[in-house]
Figure 1 (cartoon, helix red, strand yellow):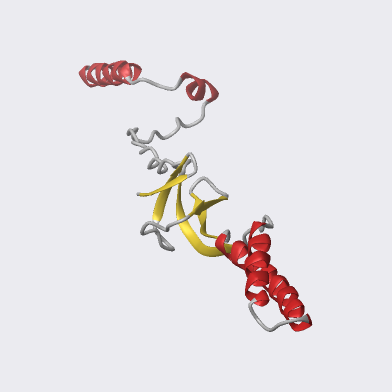
Figure 2: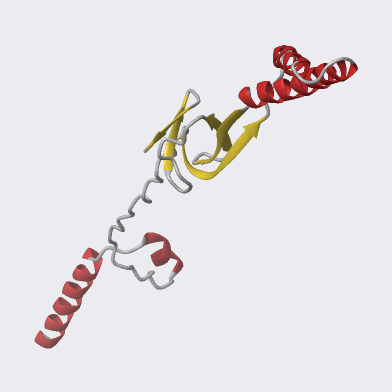
Length: 164
C-alpha cells in the first residue's frame, strides 16, 4: 500500500506540474500540437541613402559655338562711299571720260562703303550650350568665354554663367 501511495503522490505531483506549463488554448482545445515558436529578434532596417540634391540652376557645358552675324547697313556707308568714289573718279581723265570715271567711282564707292559699314556692324559671339542637372538645356550667348570650356560644371543665374 505504501507503493501505491507513493505512486499516486508522484502522479499527482506530475499532474500539478503539467498544469503550470503555459499552453496555447486554441491548439490545446482542438487537440493539435502546439505551434513551434521561433526566437524573436529585431531587424534593423537602414534608410536608403538620400539622393543627391538636384541644383536647378546648375549644369555642365556641352558645346561652345562661335556665331558670326552679319551687320546691318543703314545706307550711310553707301552715301559716303559714293561721294568719295565720285570725287576720286572726277580726278581721272577729262571730258566725257571724266564723267564716266566719276560715275564709276561713285558706284564703286557706294558698293565699297556699304560693305565696309556692314562688316563694321558685324557681331561675333559665343553660344554656350549647357545640359542642366534638372533636365533640359539652356543656351547662353556671351562675348567672351571667360575660361569656360566643354565639360566644365557651371551655374546659370539671370542669364550669367559662373564656373562652379
